[in-house]
Length: 197
Image (cartoon, rainbow, N blue to C red):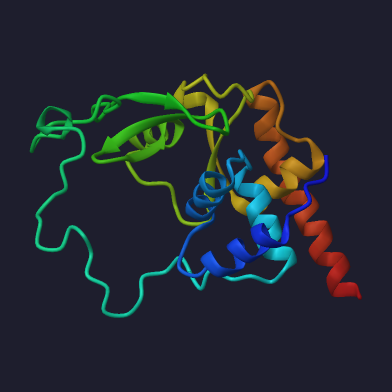
């Protein structure tokens, strides 16, 4: 149903729009004319007739906030606020494990929220050093839950890219180690071809 505004209704909207939000203007309009129009109808009328309330939705320069000088605004009472030193309900202690979005197991290594791949931690503990820059630790058998140190293999990022591209990561750690050798050969062949050009 198309609503037809009377001249009196049109004038009312035009004369009362200044300084009022759409909800407030709709309430006044409905009370004045005994109607039950939605805020959207008044908003559309204003837009179609280029009527502005002059409101920007921003605080004007010099505006004093309602909570100025108050320390901490209490919304739900003291019993709902965090006490100093209290941990949130979803807190997990350091050492906890989770499965991340890439399906790797992470271990929480520090508060408040620092996590690291379990495979990296296990490899570093077994090797006695940190993973070198530009390297990655892969699962030799492709199983991201097999943390046996013999299944965790250190590769360069370059080797990993070639292995992924050529499907050289197998379901057997020894075959994957052979895949690393093949990746190195593929890299050398590519370098020789580039030099010939």
